[in-house]
Amino acid sequence: MLERKKAAIALMALIVSNFLYVNVVWADPIKFTDQAGRDITLPSVPKRVATIATPAGSMVVTITNDGNSLVGTSPNSHNAIIEGVLDEFYPELSKVSSDIISKQGTPNIEELLNLEPDVVLQWARKTKSIDALEAAGLTVVGMKYQKIDIAKTWLTDIALMMDKKERAEKILKWHQSTYKRITSKTKLVPDANKPKVLYMLAPQRAAGPNSHFQFFMDTAGAKNALSVDAAFIDIDPEMVLEANPDIIWLFGFNAKLTPETIYNNPILSSISAVKNKRIYKVPVGGDRWDPPNQESPLGWEWFTRTVHPDLLDGSIRDSILSAYPMLYGKTPSEAQLAHILREEMNKDGKDYVKIIH
Image (cartoon, rainbow, N blue to C red):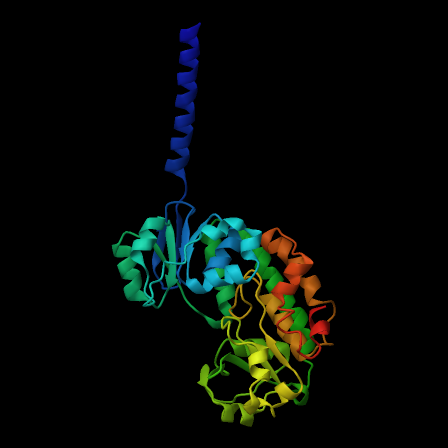
């Protein structure tokens, strides 16, 4: 009887091992051309992903809907995870390394090798860096910053890698429908009724008409307060005074740049945005709403509501409550909603209660 049991167990083990062998051997590799124009072949769906390119980190989490696939990300992305609510939705993100970029801004190859990622997402333009990473034995996929198309192309490529095509398609369908809903109203706004917006990135830096931030202004029914033909513009108080913006949006990446710092600057006290209290810090949820990413439609709506508070139906709160279960499988609490929308920081902004409720 004992011998028969042993034989049965051995047979079952053989069947299981053969099954696993067949599945490993015959698993279809993932082949595609990355945004650097390189042919990529992944033997299987990556289980461990490191993202140097920003904001790919939160996109990986969104597409996979878990915090286990992301093992390393840039300091900027890591800060957004902590600053927003993503680490509350996925506590395992507390283990993600932010040391994959050195203080000199180059990839920390030693840290990346320690993390043992199946794939590293790096900027497509960093060709020498890609070569160095591959020489170290790492598999690299190039990601190109394509202004507003970054959300579509990055979500699509990450979904392709992670075998989540339908999930990306669902998210992008929401992007398209939200854009149509907003622009169906803002395209009717007469040019004379479009306020001038200054997108301040730092006290001496602002977004010009050739940057992707212009898309936010166009979508929201606003004009750029700066007419310089450039993507990014070095500014000084005299330039801001001359531009006299009606509204100032403050870059979410710059933690030191707050409405209070602008209101308390006596040099800027005469500009329209200061006198009328129309200075707003850009929100941060699953990621900051400045760079194009999975939450872009919420950013578009928020920007529009700061410009034309009475133009859109519904509320930004309801939009978040509708979107987050799709994006993260979570419904934010009232405290998390207030945190995402920077309710305390923006409390002095004109109509901000109306804007976010």
